[in-house]
Amino acid sequence: MMVLASCVFASAAMIYAGFYLVFRCERYVSASTMLISFLLLIYGPAYLAYILWRLPISAVDKQISHSAHFPEVTIALNMAIGLMFLSVTAGIQLVNRLMAGSVQGTSAALSNWRNQPLKETYSAEVWLTCVAFALSVFMVWVSYREQHLHVILAYLSVPGDEFAKIVYRQQYGGSRIYIYNLATGTIAPMIIVWGGLVAWVRRSWLLGAVIALLLAATILGKLETLNKAPIVLFILQLLLVGYLLFRNRLDWRVCILGICVAFLVFIPIFMIAIPGMKLNEAFDFFYYRAFDFSNAALLEYFGAFPWRLAHMWGGNVRLVAALAGWNWEPSYDVVARLWRSAEGTHTTAMFIADAWVDFSYVGVVVYSLVIGALCRWIDVLLLREGKTAMALAVLAASFIGIYNLMISALPTSIVTGGMGLPIVVAIFREFGCYWARQQADGSSSEAIGAKRRG
Image (tube, rainbow, N blue to C red):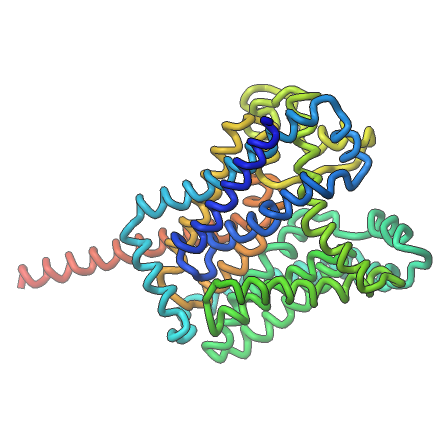
């Protein structure tokens, strides 16, 4: 009975989030609407289908579902999913109340998006050129040093089945340089969008050439991971920017179009990467990777804590562990070791997984409130000027950051997953606006003083 009640609670929370998205949020593409949409897409009906019908899909799933604690695990997971949806919408609503004036300005800018020309300030051109050139030189140097082109060509010529390619990818795929991976995954794509649009608006051939070089270096870096997701997500980023250049409307037709585009991009790549895969097998594999895989990873965390392992109460957070003098051990290692008994494997899951590991239901509520408020804060600060190159770059970065929230912890998504870039832009923008106001106030005071002395 409690299992059924928890399923009803989770379903009701999903329905509420859906109604909140349709009737309380502006029906435009923004960080907050993308957040709710992603959550409903991956952890809405797809989660219910997984937990009620498709489970188990792996040996670990089977072990958890056959355990004596499985009813309690299901109840906890259902309750956490429901609390997540309620808390995310509460965080968005909190910002709406605290920044009501700015929210109105943002709403007005979004409603007039289609009629606005793309605009950007002249000051962005110089520093974007410098940043893009520095990134390009660094990324090309790393690719040359690590022989990325050779790695890609060798991967394409690996004989055997998909397992042989997986072994090769694990051995050779991806750079070992953290800064390079950060640049390739999050920083360079945002600079490409921002700089490319500024070059177009300002007709800057120099900036355009530098951005083209950065684009080539980024594509090479993403292909060298030997994973399908990075390059596909980059394509989807660029398609999103292309759509936002003309429209910014979020309705059921756009959602269906987005899903169809994802199919059209992912399915051919699956069939190319796995020779012999049939079309129906590619669709099944897409559903498994997009929905079942993410929900299964979440179940692994909830199946481990607190039934087999005690909550870590901050020990999973590096800073908290350092301040408390604890030996820090990330939860993805702990969970992988529990279920697979093998070193070197990792199990990552969406942001509420780490929240649950550390602080149980309190963590789920607090983390969800924070990410809801954070996404809405990004909207209010960076979209109120309408269709600018900066706004489109921020939305593209938010797209990747929110995607990473669906598969990784909140700190990881902020630091390395792209969610931190809009935050950094927002902080620097507010600092720049404050400095400009101070300069204007100082100039006005000097003018008044000079007038009085005269």
